Image (cartoon, rainbow, N blue to C red):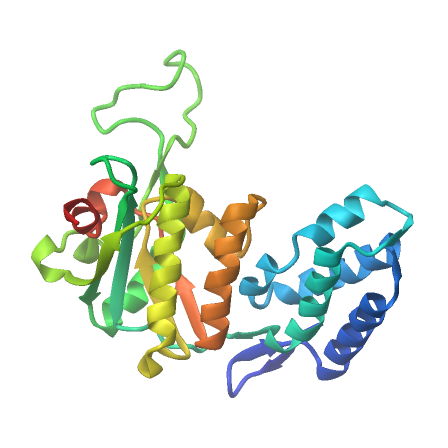
Amino acid sequence: MCIRDREKGVLSLPRAKAQQLRAAMRYLASRAQVNTAALSTLLGIWIWGALLNRNLLSIPRDVFKLVERGQGMTMTWWRNARREVCTMAESVIWMRAELNRPTAPVIFATDARGLERGDAGAFGIVALDAGRDLAERCAEEGMTPGHSVTRLDGDYTGTRTESEPWRARKPLSRLPSELLGRPQEDWADVDWGKWRFADHISLGETRTVVRLARLLASVRAARRHRVLSMQDNEACSGALMKGRSPAPSLNHLARQKAGHCLGGRLTMLLPRVETYHQPADELSRTV
């Protein structure tokens, strides 16, 4: 059950239930051993509340492994699992969704490149003062991707026979053409640089989003706003919008992004776009 404050447009857990959940998790964490059945029950309740603020979903990781390996058993606490439960207990104060946050009129785009020039790769962040009306349209229309069933010329590429039913094949951005059609000159360079070490491209893309979140959290005018940032990496966009990733390295970055968003009272929307619509692509490749 959630409480809705219609005047403030806020969904949150009832205070009494939040306090009970925090007290129960604190009690479990204070014991030398933990019953995984009880922990699994509290974990399910906590996840239900964390859906109000998906940034919190990046906190548990080893807790899931503990519950899975010790089903129905009483086990000695794993150090990292206990630390996660303690953090989860204190995070109940963030289980709220501010539905009336305005959309920032400035739209961002982040991109990263890998090993292409003998270095460790690079990143770029650009921004466009699109205006509040266009930004609101992007937030409403552009968050759900579309899909094409065939190519524009009518070719059945990807199907075995012409009689095979059409299925969704390629994701398409639904962001308004007024945004996607903007010339490169309209976008202002915000931040750019080269990485010190090489890693997977999805991690580089996600690290760039974390960098943007850190910059936005330091700007007072950005607080309590929804901020759009265009992404052309589906793994990055999907994991951060979901709130977590089963990949430890990606979830580690999701935790960093969560910390900046919670501290800066930000809601980051990360719509996916095709690479040829990514305005930050040029900056990341010219560094």
